[in-house]
Image (cartoon, rainbow, N blue to C red; front, top):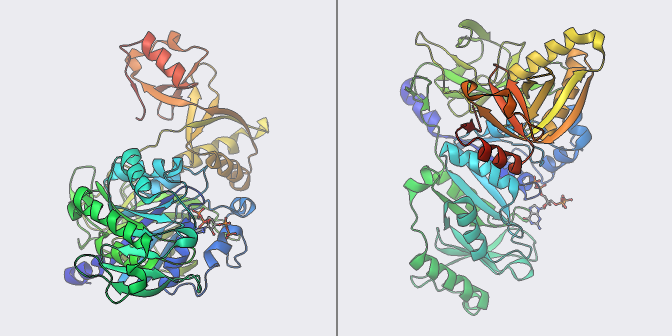
Length: 527
Ligand code: G4P
């Protein structure tokens, strides 16, 4: 492809993740989007995957046992002239660093909120990562077919709890049993809800300049419609102004009300989303240069490594987000970290639920490289003479800790090999206590430990003991400020993989107590 062709292809890509708290409806909305894209023919396919009834399921055993999505899988489909890449993030509450890192590979995010519950803890955590990246965030207030909280309440909470400006793109007319439709502020019409069909839109009613329905007396006399109209008037007068610039930087979120389950308001949401969501943009290197998507050399970075996606093949897959150029099967690339050349012949692309062999991919696309141990999370690969290293992926401070040891003391070698590789891969974080040299693992979610234990046994033939230490607050300390006497019963002094000291505090109280006692000591949450 020449530069213009590449530019044209790049401009069609929309790569995003759906973030939400478990049960808000992420699976259900994903399913609807896949239906629009024609990749599933009936509702229930994705759901079946989640509940383990899906025939094509090739997920890790652990995932099947627990009926949850361990992997951040990738779904690609075409819709409305765009090529969509949805990067799935584990929905279970004991999610992992994978979830966070997946958000490093997207260009925007869709935040699904249960309108009866509002902002829940996991939504907030994931939102903060998106906010840190400054990517656009689109909000879908779900489950409008059920009674939920007052819409204005939900919008206020969004602004206050998450600290982002909200712009409602539509407004519900009633909800639950009395749901009549949505006032589509963006398209300036009303979408009526059809209860009988229990599905979708029955009719679109256009509005005149004073927001009155054209040719629909029933709606004109609907009290709930009057309420919605008042709310819209209030928003027009006193609410935020629609601001594309703020949306692009993640300072304003367009808010859509609807119901994923009955597919109401989802299409209007997705069409507007596709209009405002960004195509892939330039990526920054460690040196501070920007690599444009239409650069004629290929580049990308590994944001996730997944082992044993298919239990029949004991393979690992390195997930690469393409940042520039065009990927072609069999091409040679340079791996920045080792400066080695690699031929990428065994590659997969992720067309929803099946792994098809990829031929070409451009910026925004995700490719899966079969890996025999060459890759680490954060690795950059590129073609061309100019060396490229993308900005390092952020480290996420672990919150949960376990002490780990080999069950069989005679098998230290496989234990150490396994730990070394899994830590390098970024599956968990490794620490050692200062005094006893015990191995301590840190993670952001319990699931990472379970995956670690499973993989140690299955891939390295090493059974491990894990002794939970619970939640801790990790804070690094400057080595020259460290005095071993600072360690007490309320904190544990450990060193990280590269030997930097940090304290694991029992709780907030222990952290405050330490700060009061040593006011001059600088503690940092991340290295
Ligand atoms: P998740 O991936 O975010 O965890 O949520 P998921 O889509 O699995 O949805 C969680 C539950 O909420 C499901 O019910 C689902 O049917 C329901 N749900 C999702 N969207 C809507 C909606 O718009 N309206 C209503 N009323 N319910 C919705 P479940 O009882 O756990 O599963 P199921 O047995 O009904 O499939």
